[in-house]
Length: 262
Image (cartoon, rainbow, N blue to C red):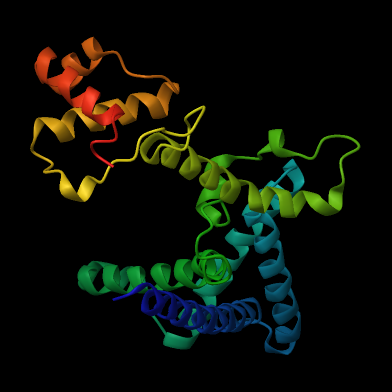
C-alpha cells in the first residue's frame, strides 16, 4: 500500500468514524430522553433538551476543565448521561434484573447487566473521543473523558492574565503537534547530519563502497564526527570508533582528502 492509498484509507476511516459518532450520539440522546421520561412520558421534550445540554457539557469537559465548576459539572453530566441511558436501554429492551433472576439464573442476570452497563458506557463516553480522531487523526492531545479525568482540573493550563483568550483554544490544540514536529526535527538532525556548523567538505560515492569494508566504517565515522562537531575527526578517534588499524585509517583519510572517494 503506497502513501496515497494509505491517505485515502485514513480519509475513509475518518468519514466512517464521523457517521458512527452521529449514530451513537443519536442513540445516547434518544435513550437519555427515554430514561428521563420513563415515569412521565409527557416530559420527554425536557429529557431531550437535557440530553443535548449534557452532550455539550461533556464536549466542554473533554477540552480540559480549567476550573472546578467545569470539572465537577462535566463529571455530573457523564453520571447523568450514563444513568439515564441505562434507564432508557432497560425500558427499550425490557431487561429483568430482579433479585429472583439473580438467584435462579445468575449467569443470565450477569450477562444482561453487562449489556446494560456496557452499552450505556459506550454511547456516552466513546463518541467524543471518536469525533476528535475523525477531525484530527494525528492529534495526541487529551480530548476524551478518561484523559481529562486522569488530568484532574488542570488548573495550571489556565490562560495567563492578559493573554488573548480567543487564541487560547487554538494554541492549546496545536501545541502537541508543534511539540511532536520539534521532536521529529531533532531526531532528523541527529541522524541525517543537518546539525553541523558547516557543510561536510568531502563528497563520497557510497554506492561504490561495500558497507562491510574498513573504508566504509572509517568514512562513516569521519562524516558523523563532522556532522556533530563541524571539525575533522582525529585519526586516533577514528581508529577507536571504527576498529580499523591506525595505518589503514591514515591511508583512507589521505585518499579521502585527495577526492579519492568522490
